Length: 231
Image (tube, rainbow, N blue to C red; front, side, top):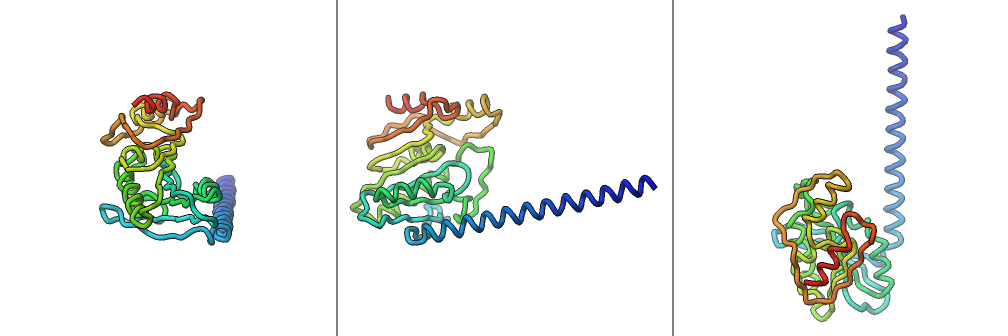
């Protein structure tokens, strides 16, 4: 009898657990849809969405933000290695409010861009530089007389340098130019083992660059920015 009561109790607890999971999933879906609706209503007048073919024939999804006033220059946003371009809406909105045209995009394997087998233990993939290069070439072809720069964030800063584009300016946030140092810092401070594909660690650029670094950031240190300024 005790065994039967025990099984009944387990069954009841299992049902409660399943119901809790279902309720949680419903709440998450509701919040995600609500957030999407708010974003769409707020940004619909500003955003045009389209696909750009990469140099190796994949589709890269793009959001183009157009300012209401006459645009100054064009800024391509190269994001980090997590999430998709919807995570950067606030930054893009701010730049648009200052009359910049903003181009954000998802790397292959992210968001609505073509699927791609991106191994999670890689710090970056060289293919991401192809995606950025493809976006730059497309934007330049459509705006031949505009000044075009890149706002890189975290991994996007290295991807930008690796792409070796003829930019008019560069903004680096959470900057790094030596992936080996980032790999070692992630292992030391986060206990994360990362893999690095073929890479470079020395870059000389001719365009003006503005670098943002946090003095207490253990992963993308100010030392890398200082070394970059000396190249």
